[in-house]
Image (tube, rainbow, N blue to C red; front, side, top):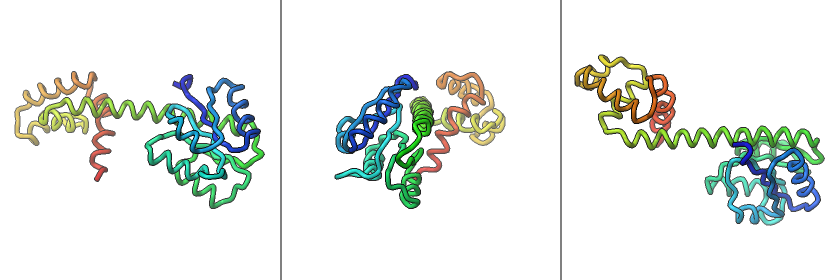
Length: 207
């Protein structure tokens, strides 16, 4: 997945932007660079990858772009670069999910390390989201009774305990249990728990 990643560079300083792009390309990253936040938004960036953003730009700053991307649901890890770093700026950037904030002039290796970290995070998040989406789709295929059984199996309850809770026979629980495992394409309660519990936790933690 990292081979498909793109490093999106946004800096109104032509020399700095080209320097960052050349550096990233020199170690094999695919790069797209833009002179403004508006140009990046028009390009509709998407993961996997990361953003290298200048903090202070005319029209729309890097922090404003970070917020605009969040509103659009575009989840790309961000590395901020600035010539005017200060504590409050760093705190604000990191609070909103920035991976790193580098003050110009920065060490080339520091930027490359930050890009590698950000891309790994992007790939991991993308894989996790795909896994969650698949679990959600499979869960929706279950009947209401299968969902009741699936939740209890994932929580580690034995068939007899599930039968007692639901007021059905242990044999019926076993039938539902087998159907659930088949639909989720798993072979054990532990595998079902790994797929289902994060989904259930998200639903219970929602509004």
